[in-house]
Every structure is written in C-alpha cells, then in structure tokens.
Amino acid sequence: MQLLPHKQNSPFRALSDPTRRKILELLSRQEMTIAQLTDHFDMTRAAVKKHLTVLSDGGLITIRARGRERISTLAPEGFAPVLDWLSYFESFWDDRLESLKSLIEKDKP
Image 1 (spheres, rainbow, N blue to C red):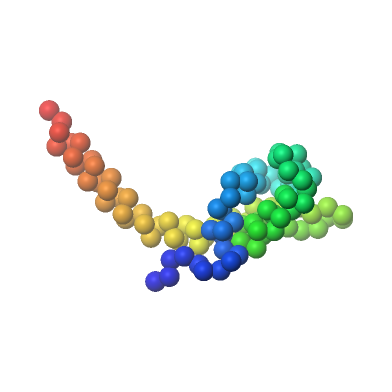
Image 2: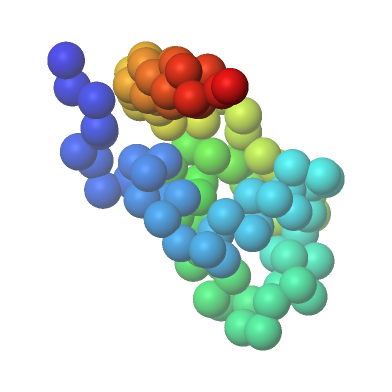
C-alpha cells in the first residue's frame, strides 16, 4: 500500500508551508481574489500567486477567471489523499490512547 504520493504537486507539498496553510484557512471562509489574499500577508502579489499555484497544483484550491480577476476557492475534495493517509495511522493513536486510559484507570485509588 502506497501511503504518500510521490508527486511534486501533491497536497502534502502544498500543506508543508505555513503561508499556504493560512491561505487555505482564509479560503475556507470565502472565495477571494489574489488582491484580497495579498492584503493578509507581508509579501508581494507575485509571491502570493506562487503560493496559489502550488495549492492549485496540489488540488486544494481552484482558480477561475472573473473578468480580469482570478478567484481562488477551496477544493475540499483535494484533501482526500491527506485524510486517507492520516486515517491509516488512526488505529495507532486509538491503541495508544486506549493504553494510556488503562494505565490511568489502573492508578486510580
């Protein structure tokens, strides 16, 4: 079973940067233009656009034209590979938490 995509344009690469994670957080509230997103960061419009390209290539956002503007929208379906990868490890955490719970209950008076 291959758990981690080995593509350069994977959602994991897109999520690896804190600026891109902040962009996703902003887009989770509403779709935004590049100009609107740039207002939230201390960087140039070109730098924001590069981040948007990585997010788009990773399948986490879509970008559409509206006249001369480019509108970025969150693409929730793009998170499926990330959720699949995390769910593979869910049983590990469930087992660890169950062990911790047993130890705590054992030490109770």
